[in-house]
Image 1: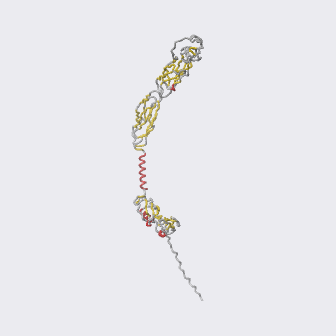
Image 2: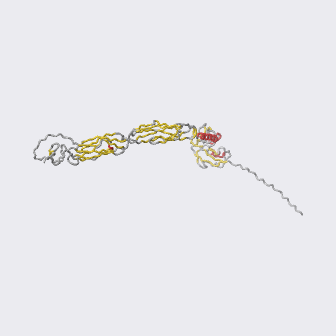
Image 3: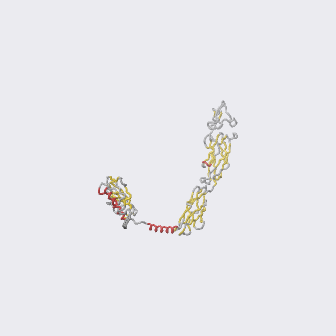
Length: 450
């Protein structure tokens, strides 16, 4: 048995459920509107029918929805399949951000007049966010029904979402504390976090009525999601010439009230007189404790270490010189000062040490024992061994002072011409008073009486 499509007249030989030409459902029971055709019936030539698109009715109960930002609203309506084709329809919203609308579920509809299931109610959820980008204005959009069978838009309807305004303002001041002698300037930043333009009036006052407060500009026009800045200037009415700082509190009337602090400084701080007196006392103490004036270093090159030390002592130096040896090839430089630091003529403190570089030969000799002898005797013993008398401590000791310590020690090896440093002790003169010898007394001879 062959069935003819009631919409386009195409015969169905394969027994399909839907017409391959127009998509009409072919398995309806035979009625006067859709008679069945038998295979053996004479073929009737029918005129070619123009293919008409599926007809879907999309109707909204109201085309406008007012929804507060961050709230929930809905548009309700009905979708009806007025075509002769069974189809499924998905809803799509164009003209709104993707997360603002929740499309209804897919509608499964049979052809109109085929019984229940050709019409379905739906609800479109609208959820604009509570954010500046959800501007308080009408948002036109389109709701479309898209055929899942063909992928084409079967119907569309226009609607409008009106987002209601909300106000949210924030303010902050930076810095919140200033200090100065004449004035302080602050930046007051106001942010419009709402979805409608806002006008903000600003005012300020000093709690003690001791300052003039000026805000420029006194009013701000701020678009949604934008920020604007005003300058707050605080100027004390009285000049603070001397004394401790004075702190002023300023209140600013803003969307979020601000409290500012201005620390007024005196032109002459309170601690200046005390510091001046302290500096004077310190200067007097420094003058009293100041040591001897700098001393020019004498020329000591070519001298023996003993002679160089004597020149330094005579110049006023209190510290003993420091020695450094250097091997030389000229015999005339052996045992002599060949360099000095600081150089001659340089002014240094009396407690400063002068570095003396002495020449020595590349020959090793044994250091004699000079402990317990006088300074002159020690010099003679050292000269016999090819050594020289080095630094003498104390430098102003008399020549008859005894050597208490020597460096290098006796018996150690030293290069020819090396200086031996000595530590002296002043010998105490003992007054030797001779003990008187008693004069013997003559014993009288006894007289023998006959």
